[in-house]
Amino acid sequence: MKILVTIKQVASLDEDFEMRGDNRDIDPDFLVHDLNEWDNFTLEEAMRLKEGPGGDNIEVVVATVGPDSADEELRKCLAKGADRAIRVWDDALDEADPIAVARVLAALARRESADLVFAGVQASDHAFGATGMAMAGLLDAPHAAVVAALEYTPGEGTATVRRELEGGTYAVVKINTPAVLTLQLGINTPRYASLRGIKQAAARPIEVVGPDDIGLAAGNTGAAGSLSRVRRMYVPEKGRAQMIEGTPAERGIATGEDHQGIQGRSMMAGILVVVEHRKGELRPVSRELIGLATSLKASSGEPVQVALIAADPARHAQALQLAGVDEIVTVQSAGDAFDPEVYEASVRALIAARQPSLVLLPHSVDTLGYAAPLVVRDGHGFTTDVFKVERDGDGWVATRSGYGQKVNVEMEFPGHATVVLTVRPGSFKPVEAAGTPAISSLPAPQVTPRSQHLAFEEPAGGDDVDIPGADFILSIGRGVGEEDNVEQFKELSDSVGATLGCSRPIADSGWLPKSRQVGQSGKTATNCKLYVAMGISGSVQHMAGMKHVDTIVAVNTDPEASIFTIAKYGIVGDIFDIGKELQNHF
Image (tube, rainbow, N blue to C red; front, side):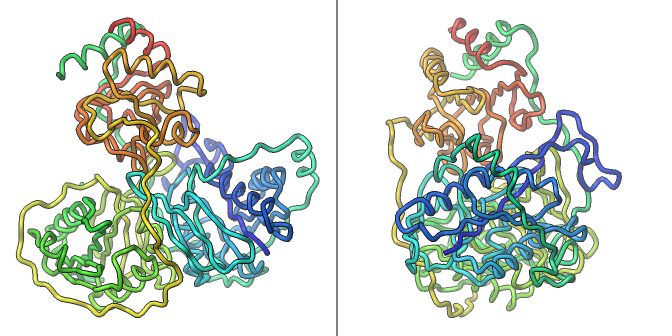
């Protein structure tokens, strides 16, 4: 049996950086490279299976697409126990988007006859979240995205996975194998390489091949195999945080005083919105997508069609009769539980029937499972996690973040009559006013199931904290450094009358219960009036759970931390010094 683990050498930015001459990327001299954080977990999961019951005959192969500098990351994997390492490269791959990279890796997976393919959910530099699932589409393999737990006996024809959903809920799914899985942070505890392993890895060979060696035609590589192109990269304007200056004591007092004072083909082709529901309820992002679509209708003149895929479409259709919607198209599925292949086939049928120029999907866990397979099979323009969409002549331009949200990236889609975008939740105002759209139906495509939803599971409680109901939350992130430091922030939160929350890394490490995690895969600070973020850099996933709060105070040593773009007040300083002064003040 063979497990192919795909990895990526990711880039982060120096504190000071410059754009490349064409303003489409960062000057390479200002980039720092490392192994993608998610890939530590994918490798560990492969090694866990290899070292577990029935794993004696498992071969773990790590592979990447990149220049010779990526050998360093492959050797890290060899040092941790991988059996072989393969790097695919050609200068023509330099302008590849995530879909073009997936074409290379899928071709390699075919050559290797991999039984399981593991990829990280996303890469930490650009966070497209598309390569693994695009591979699944190219391989026509059963697949599951955002896997937080895996139960599999080598040689068996099925595996059971727990998919981590928004809000901390899990979906338990049985899936046929061979399969492609994208694995989430926290699925295991990655090992460290031993000194002996590092020395041995330095002497081991890395197989280097080109696209031709794995049967990939030139038209499927690099820019020719891509579904998007960077038009422009730029540094966004600074956020609205008012920076609090002074000594730690003065800044701590300012933070405390704030608490005391509170007690964006042709015309008329159409815009297709695919809404999302779970456990019998429409997800709030659905109305946000309609809000975006109706604003684009006003500027482009294209009609808005809203698609609903459900076992009982009538249950949700009335709630979608909103101002600006021209048509609601229902597709009656066999069941309400999410199946990526049902959604992929249904959206394909909708696109074929309505020929939209633009398709808007939520950037969600479910969409991660079907959007990339859809576009890689059908050749639509595509990008993910966008927060701005605009018309430029006859084409669409979408803006997303890059390099840990330190830059904005405008994406364009030349030569594609239909563009598919996943839209970041919370980026657009939802539509509230009622409308009178036409309602029609489309026959559901026939799909042979290769996975089965078994159940929803809620995370273990841990304690009785009520993050959604708290009006004052003090959250801690990686800046706390180590577990022993958590206790002083528990004491601080008690002293100032706050509920203690945390970012994902703290919960994944087991330093605080999952019930205290704020963010996309944790809880939303629904009723919070004051949110103090201590040592939290501000990932998109964390900000999804708290950026709506009226008063956000951010404390971070990095003046360029993303959290400052949404904070009302910002303090560049040490969280321990500020915490001490806050406690003294109260």
